[in-house]
Length: 334
Image (cartoon, rainbow, N blue to C red; front, side, top):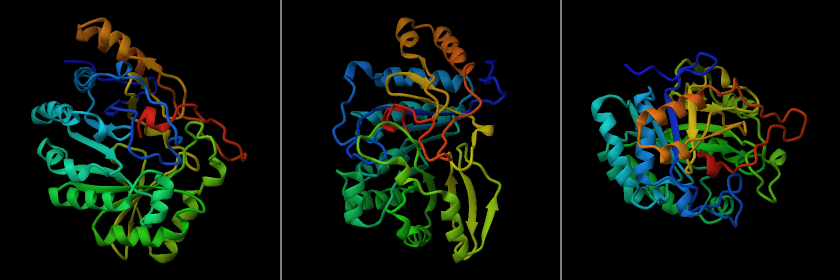
């Protein structure tokens, strides 16, 4: 029996997030600069290499696999990869195959995703205002995303909305967003903006809206009950008693969530980041391409996990962006 992946702090690694592309059809202001330089194709892992990499992690005990980008559904022939990964669902080795998407391509792919075993998806959506949506995504169009959400729900996919809390941008939509999600039986998670990458003209401190304040505003509308459940990610959940909906809070800045971290990230170029908020990483592409022996790749994976830190060092408390990492979120994967 294969020994599971255990990091230096006795945390079992059961959750893998894999970026399949750094490209996206949006240019969200907190994620990308408007004029991005994308990676040459030869640097990206092929779909076959992604399969081999993910399958190695499944053998080593990963039970949840989340596909990210960029926007994962703009990767050419991406459904070939999803169909291949579904074999691990069929054997029971993998418990969940899911993805995070901006929703732009769901009108095309929702039925296919359900057919290969995807049962729930996360959709990034920061506003229900069409003009503001175009402003924050630069290239995105809200009606296209709304059609994608409709298609996902029709296909049977459970939808969760991820909303980045941005001061001065969507503060006034707190009630609108929560009520819209409640009416559609969609879960909602709010995320504090993270200091990832130099975007040229964006003020991270100016964007930062603490979820402590957001939660207090929700509590003023309805009683909130803390829920013990965890979904393998960093969110902490509450139930809104007057609607019954579930709302999550991801607070890397105002509340450190590292103590139970069970996840690692693979970039589209085969680097493994064992902490989103640290620069440290290991190269898995080289051993993947150097040898066809699975044992060699697994040895490289174990060596990388042995370097996983105890936690990140994001900190806005001194009104400066301490712990900012240089890479864009689109490179690491959401």
